[in-house]
Image 1 (cartoon, rainbow, N blue to C red):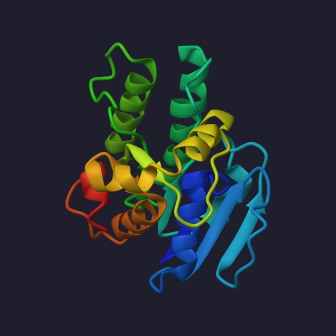
Image 2: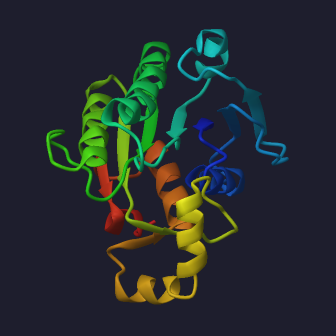
Length: 218
């Protein structure tokens, strides 16, 4: 399986990249991003591309991929709904529509979040934008899977790019193992998430929307 990865520099993307490089079913990993990851591996190829909303020059490369892991995400903190929509809905759909045109039926995994509002009309801004994004992806001619993790425990040195999240993980680090045991339905790990996304790309998941407990089964 040749896979395409967006967002490899974020905490989830770092984990997905690690699991892809370790997984024997993954033949090649093509990372597209605004900066190189610094990772070296025989299975890894990187393309530095500034404008992720315009992938026209990369289409021959993208058309050779069997699956896409879309791990780009931003915090809604301090953003207006139009700004968050542009960075969440618009960017995601620009990539997904290109892939749907190039490779109809391609596997596409999207990291959403626990509490995402499928109606797209609820009170919580980030949840309704994520809900609209999920619905639009599921309507495309892709084999799309939505991932809704809650608390994600980094297992192999992965670090969030969001300063507030880094502070949270630093302060909460002693408690995270206890939370995993006490709230198994609300806590997952970067390792579980990476493995679950590979399973989805390989057609080994039973449904299109995976909640935290579903993710933990991988």
